[in-house]
Length: 108
Image (tube, rainbow, N blue to C red; front, side, top):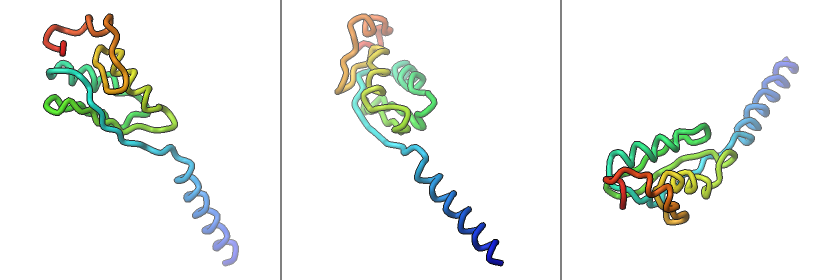
């Protein structure tokens, strides 16, 4: 009986420590310049990466909601991914070259 208690206690400790060791997720919401459904698809597809749990850009509010693993990404890296597409954020401005590649209806 004593061995069973020790085994149960050890198992419980392992489960607790695994929960602490797992990567934490963080949610951010930020403005992203864009105009249409093509922008939405482009932004969300670019953020469809391992380590990003949710990526949703709202056409009306021009706000992007991202839930990501802090052990995989830093917030600035997410802004850079979006800016590389040609869509400026409040932290990182898209380059002229990436902006010029956008379809005419996507230019803001």
